[in-house]
Image (cartoon, rainbow, N blue to C red):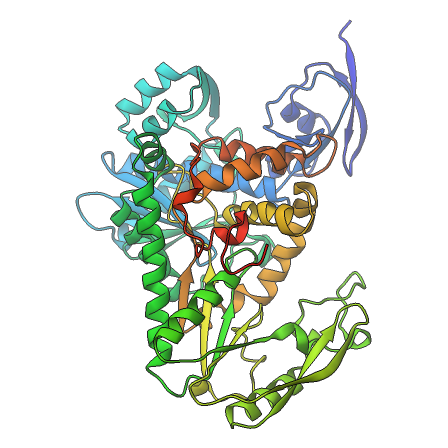
Length: 554
């Protein structure tokens, strides 16, 4: 008689099955309405693929696209289908999935002739054919030597270069008919799990659209993000200057001892861009209010300090005002859907008083600045008096900086808006991008441990709330910026790694954030370490997170 195990299916019930049953077979047995809506599962706080066998009593959460790990599986599976369709149509083309853009994934197809709108339509038709056939996606554990043979035949040299430095005897490959690929995360068991996607022609490439949380898990409406696209293009140019597009290129520079040059050029590119922004502000005497906004851990604080220095070299005498001092009194703070104080809401700021003080300062009048008492939850006046001259622009850093509602009374000609984010130009390989969110999360884990007393578990616990605030208060306004600054440094994950790994390894297996910690640990394992931090200048944005910044008293 077969040995039995008890399985608790979250939100469904408790069942008894034969030991060794696969998750995909459980889904068939419990007879849900749509079997293919489930893309993977979390088993005892670890993400598993659907063909994973259960061998002991356990708790299982089935994942659909409403869960971030389910959506990741959907996105990877769709990407695999897209790459296979492109290979079917353009055999010798090199397909790259580069970065997120306009609520989708931007991709380029490198072939003899430029991509056309008609070809995009043909790719979409081929993808639909592959999906409708519900072709099995095989997952196989293969020797590294055999993997290199397969990728050599398929001319995937970026993947080969990465594999050679991983020191693994075997690795998992996915195959779709006769085409093989590697993905750093699970895929669905067959192509029929994909039920919704779109392709948007976006010269010189296209944008792969799929359901998103922000659009209630429907295909989002395509929105032009020309300024953001331009910054990504700039990042690509920087990658070309450094000759580093993939993790394997970075690892090679670390191993051959030429990484110091990469660090120096990366930092020089940052300085050049900051100087350019300062020049743009300085050349227009009407620009009196400089507004800096960006998502969490994008390096806004260091950027603001470096911008201030560059403005001074242009003859300006910038001063800073803290938006926090204009919080409304605690009892007037708006509350979120859970009844908690929503300090990230723009309504948490006394916009009327803030604008009144800014107008007076621009007019050359004296202003009594408030100081917010966070313990008492009230604004106080302690004799801080400020009066500025025409050559003194006011730098204001805060999440609502790009939202015109914040500075409604200030004429547009007097404002200069800057969006700061870490838009990494580095990818794992041509088909596996590094999400900018992951870079910022790793920065925050390191910074929160060093300066805020939070362990990695606490940072991971807060991250979803942080992301919701960004989606609501920052990202909708990013195209309103006069200029965007990319704070990512191509080498930084090779430095952050040694700080982040010990923190992530402390996340206990019995907490819900273990799966995310494990995912980040695997991601960081692809990077070789940069051990010598003396090559990183004390003005670097990276120093804001690892320590040693000349802008922070430690």
